[in-house]
Image 1 (spheres, rainbow, N blue to C red):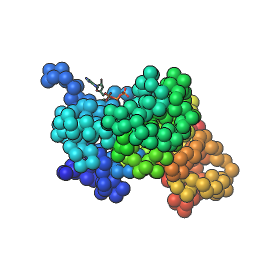
Image 2 (cartoon, rainbow, N blue to C red):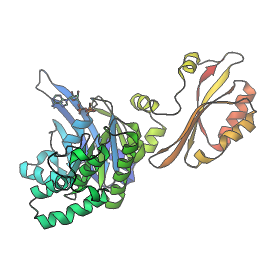
Image 3 (cartoon, rainbow, N blue to C red):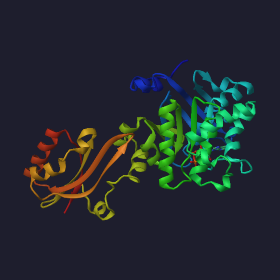
Image 4 (cartoon, rainbow, N blue to C red):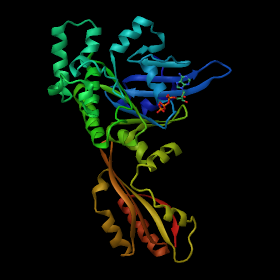
Length: 364
Ligand SMILES: Nc1ncnc2c1ncn2[C@@H]1O[C@H](COP(=O)(O)OP(=O)(O)OP(=O)(O)O)[C@@H](O)[C@H]1O
């Protein structure tokens, strides 16, 4: 298997991905004929590490669904290769594709359950198709419903289940053929925040307990932040950034990532402040600084020490401590007098404590 340089770089920088489950190698997908064609994916390189949860995030139309549909052969690449566990998907015939799809589970935004079948029979469906007898099916479906917390709902029809319960059935059905890869297409987008969290917790548990590789697409930053160890950010058919979720979310380099993060971050500046912000100080101005707390520093009482260090005249304008892919991350926007003495004292404090800082501007 040849891995292109950019994907190889990603692997070198990320030993956890030394053993990829999926690689996209210079993948381009064009829809339509030559005169009226549309490039949905443009030269995409991506590595999905075995046993990891990888999130693909992007706005509507970015190409996420197309990307995921290439993995189970529902779409074909125009150029490049998609390799799943060593097999080039583009090289498979109908029989090969059928056996590949048995090894890939999929869950959907609208669950795609059969309304005329009970929860049990929905989960049983892929096993019936695989030709298992009733006893073997029963032996598999029971524990799966147990795993997703629905043992007492086996005989309920989809119309008798809540959205979260329907998605649990969808997850059990996806796991029925013991896949090595689970594809999740906006699986929590139709659910309320609380139910979303419970479904994400279930996916995280399945990943940890079964070692199942999960590739999920979403437009929700919150989803990636909660469960994905790795993330790729897509914009109009290209991957603009990829890497460890913590690294990408704490130091976003691409404008698309910054914009998507700003919408969810607790440190967005109020509009009135943004309007008044200027890049060069005038006499009597206050300086606005964004402090970033990573790892252990997120829990230290550094704000109190900053106040002691530069005197009481410090305002806190915005701030949040969040968890990104299981690691704490805090940001705080503070303002204090932009006098040489105060700035020097604050800078000394930042250097001593290793706090990372960004000057946002000055206000009167
Ligand atoms: N079969 C098709 N024929 C023509 N164009 C298509 C086809 N499928 C997708 N596209 C186009 O490719 C682009 C990417 O679509 P895709 O569905 O992959 O994006 P997405 O990021 O999943 O968006 P959404 O979140 O809205 O589903 C879109 O502009 C879409 O219109």
